[in-house]
Amino acid sequence: GAGVSQSPRYKVAKRGQDVALRCDPISGHVSLFWYQQALGQGPEFLTYFQNEAQLDKSGLPSDRFFAERPEGSVSTLKIQRTQQEDSAVYLCASRPRLGTGGSYGYTFGSGTRLTVV
Amino acid sequence: KQEVTQIPAALSVPEGENLVLNCSFTDSAIYNLQWFRQDPGKGLTSLLLIQSSQREQTSGRLNASLDKSSGRSTLYIAASQPGDSATYLCAVRGGTSYGKLTFGQGTILTVHP
Image (tube, rainbow over all chains, first blue to last red; front, side, top):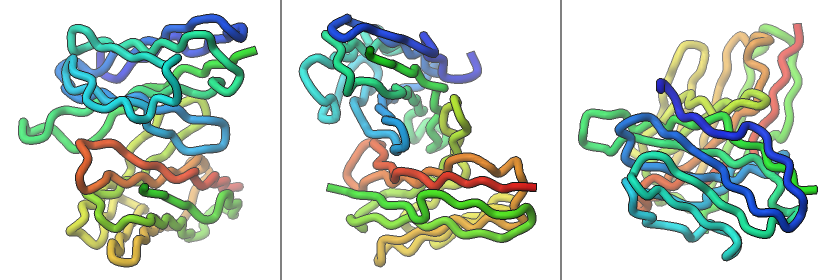
């Protein structure tokens, strides 16, 4: 597609439930990022993939958070045993690799709004 | 650790005014700085990107400046319009990172007719 697609748009989870959030980046984009945006705050970095390799997961807040990108395209962010503090918008962004003629720009998806009740 | 602060947190102006949004960052070793716009329920749209070697960038009614040594950037919006109403986010890319962005908390702009 033309943009970064995220699904679902909205997710309500009961505390303790596991959730999986999907990101379809722009075709051919090498870099993929996940960010968490709490209400009224700016996005905060969670994790970064270059192709299928997860090169940085330093922003994941706990071991309940897990991300994968097994074939270097679609990525899934999984949250186990959700807690109320996990309620936020989860944004995915992709970017072409520098040096291939692509832009420096990031394309963000519309996000998944997760509400844990 | 890089910290990015945006002032003001919210701004309400009448249509036609020129306005300035401010962004400051604590670590001047940045690769670039970007200004984004976020509409409710939408993703982020990149407005302007300033490389660390540049002083400013312009696009239409928008002008962004960068003073890396003092850790400051401003976004100037000329002749504001109601369609400019959105949250504006400033983000810096660290000098040694692969592209991770550190965001400010944003400025909520309302332009009323």
